[in-house]
Image (cartoon, rainbow, N blue to C red; front, side):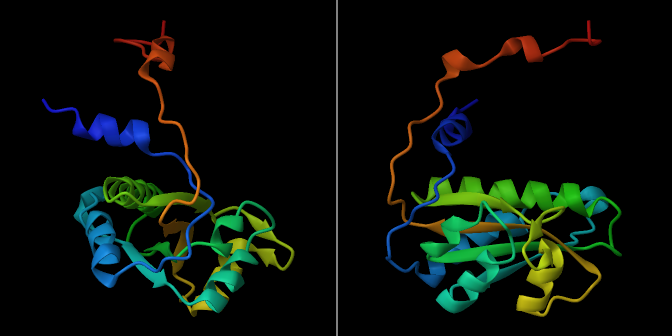
Amino acid sequence: MGYEVLEILKKRRSVRKFKEEKLDKEVINKVLRAGLLSPSSKNKKPVEFIVVDDKETLLKLKECKSKGADALNTASCAIVVIADSQLSDVWIEDASIATILLQLAAEDLGLGSVWIQMRNRQSNLGCSEEQVRKVLNIPEKYGVLSIVAIGYKDESTKPYDESSLDFSKVHYDNYL
């Protein structure tokens, strides 16, 4: 077994400051391929993506959350991860898988990213999910899980070190 995925996992860290350089559509599409390939319960594929690269809209999205969305100030683009809650009762899990796969693909391409949680979060204007729905005209049946801010890294982060892995959190056959 190759260890390429483990190396990507070690390198992937949340990046909240990005260079002003715009992302090519082909680069964004490579990231989106990972999300579109993500597995889903019963292969229902309830997850959809909204790519936002308009600076004004990115700033409106930032206002949809009280704190933790500052990466949208400098991100080249953001991918809003939504899912049809009528199509799947486990849309949250499916959208979570898709979100992390977007981040791993971004890292593999040398990009930085950060997961900005929207579900169960608030802004000064109320429910973050509702605010994102208003900004992007998303139908009510879609749950809004997250926004992934993406761009070329303008900060360096130290990779994770496997020596810090806590194997006491691994249990075999039962908890004790």
